Amino acid sequence: MLRGERVLLRAMVRDDLAVLHRLHDDVGTAVLAEVDPWTPETLEQALARYDAYTPDPANVRFTIASLADGQVLGRCVVWGIDAFNRNAHLGISLLPQARGRGYGLDALRVMCDYAFRIRGLHRLGLETLATNTAMIATAEKAGFRREGVHREHAWVLGAFVDEVLFGLLATEFS
Image (cartoon, rainbow, N blue to C red; front, top):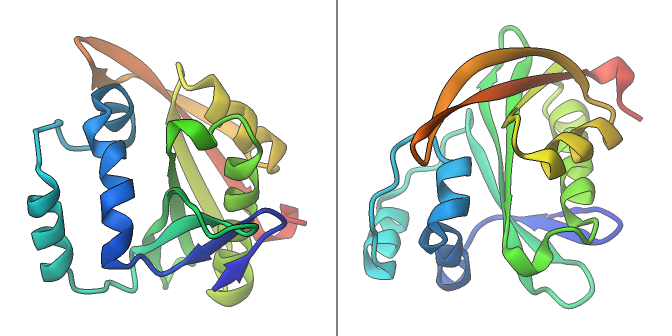
């Protein structure tokens, strides 16, 4: 388990899915976080997918829980880990009641610590929609640098949206 100041990042367990499935059911949020088009999915289907999942060292997923009481707050992933070039990407989704309370920043910092100190990575990327002002502010507070924009890169709820690219080097992380 990885501890921050306010959050605990731990392995996702089957019981987490009852809470985390709310992220999928919130279509407005789900379309911002997933690369595949949103389709309806029952909790039973999500559990079956979980049961069939094989851990992948190139895509490490965590449940974000409150350090204070263990309440599930969301999920995050260090994905696309390239062991040769020593880089990866980060992704995070928080339940609505956990947003705007500092949990995202703490989880992001813990993921960076995991990636740099434990996995020995050199560079992390983070991509978010230009409309996701909360994630942009969180990335910048965590020390990520804005590196560019993919113009009209994502199709979101009937419109193309720019994607903002961020990067952080191990030497820049404190």
